Image 1 (cartoon, rainbow, N blue to C red):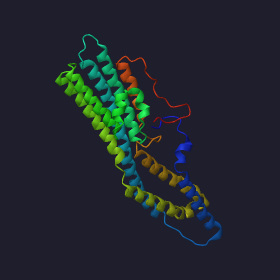
Image 2 (tube, rainbow, N blue to C red):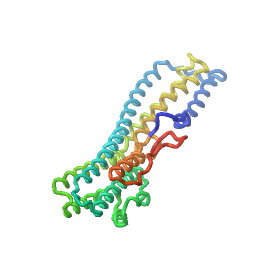
Image 3 (cartoon, one colour):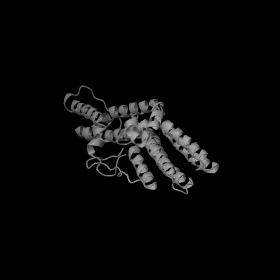
Image 4 (tube, one colour):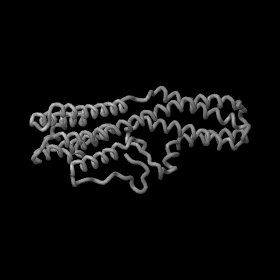
Amino acid sequence: MLLKNNIPIGYVFGKIKFEVLFVTIYATIIALEDKFFHFFNISIPLSVPMVLGTVLSLLLAFKSNQAYDRWWEARIVWGAIVNDSRSLIRQLSCFIEDPYVSVEVREFIERFTNRQIAWCYSLGMSLRNSMSIEKISKYLTEAEIAYISKHDNIPNALLELHAKDLRFALQAGWLNKFQQVEIDVTLTKLTDSMGKCERIKNTVFPVTYTLYTHFALFFFVLLLPFALLEIFGILEVLMVIAISSAFFLIEKMAIHLQDPFENKPTDTPMTAIARTIEINLKQMIDDQNVPEKLKPLEKEYYLL
């Protein structure tokens, strides 16, 4: 996720450097030809690119809006994951009846909490196609690692272990039926959130819409110099660069926002959110090994 401050200009305009280079060369050739060579004399009324620009603006506005909706939905889902993770451990800690404060119950709650932390990290890695069991192994027992290694969907396997532990707690008399059902509702919410993330990840933004918008944008850029040449002369180069850059930036913004799980600076900050969840959950069970909150380095302008 991009932060408010320290976003370098190079990052912003670096996304459209090739497009701007093309526009600069193209507009310069048109201006030089008109001033010195006169091989052809093409003049287009300004109203033509204006109409095309209006249509293009509507297309880009729709695309940007849909892309932002996908990004914002992803952020809402991860906000729900934060809340449900806290609720899960709070329910477990408060519902379990342990009048003698036994070591077994304490270890059970710690194991459950660590597994939930591992689930948050594993979901983020899974969505970014960078799943690594080694990175979450410190939160899991050897038996749990052996179990999830047999599954393709690691987060789903961890939720299954949650459910099995709930059944064990019920059979041991630590939870009653109503408490188990209530905690299982929270697990279902986590499953729903995981499914929503996977839907966003696996549903591709319509390629034809992106292609048509990109084609219309380049067609607009090709026509623009001929409409501005009579008005601005050789200065049309600067005008074409300025106008086209604005359109290209909007298009690039939409392209990056439409995929919030691609390990880019514009991503939903899943790793940072998972670290926040880890801090909260460990404090809830009085764990002394609480990590620090993730912060961007001095020269970084985003959080993943």
